[in-house]
Amino acid sequence: MTAPPAPELHVVRVFCGPGGRGGNPLGVVRNGAAVPDRSARQALAAELGYSETVFVEGTGADDDADAGRLDIYTPGVRLPFAGHPLVGTAWLLRHLGQPVTVLRPPAGEVPVAYDGQYVWVRGRPEWATGRRTREFAAPADVDALSGPPPGDGPLYVWAWQDRSAGTVRARFFPRRGDGIVEDEATGAAALTLAGELGRALDIRQGTGSRILARPHEDGTIALGGRVLPVSPRA
Image (cartoon, rainbow, N blue to C red; front, side):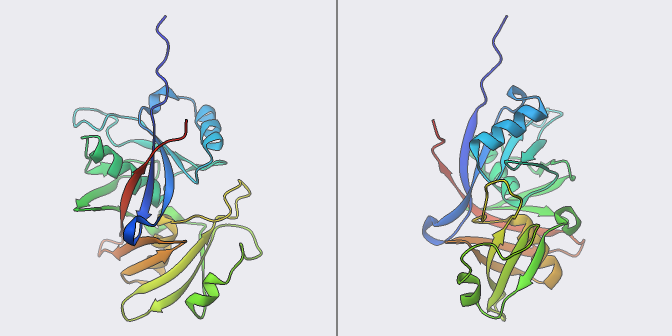
């Protein structure tokens, strides 16, 4: 019998800021079929320990029925939609010579656009339900937090850095109890905030990440950012 293929793991940093700073690490298993069972995928995501790990189903080729289909896991749960995994996967597929125009997480079809160094995906606010936002008076108040505020459930704390320019300072605390205390960059939460405010945002999150969010007339919100590769762990 032929041995099953080993998972082909790539690691990237998504929503990198100026000078390549920040960016949320993402694990991408390029050949998701090598880990076909959901329980095994969940176990691998927990072992890797990234805030999210993606399993890509198809090759990305136009004649592949599974092109762009993927599965997203945190260390503890499966997600129907998440921003930084979609941006990171779209970048990786282009980097591997297989760019896509659409990705298909469980939530629905996500259009993809490539604009120079930036990768854009578009999703719907209702796909990011459960994430609450809390406005603070000033960026210094956001920076002063030593850890997650009390409470349960995902929380996006933010403050205007420059209201007229749409620049925001933000941090995200998953509060899922899965070992991820704070996400460096979080697309779904940025999508939620842009939907609530109804305007384009330039979000500076974590230690140096940058997320761009732009509402569209059809109710979708585009998330854009830069992605850089990193060496996966042995």
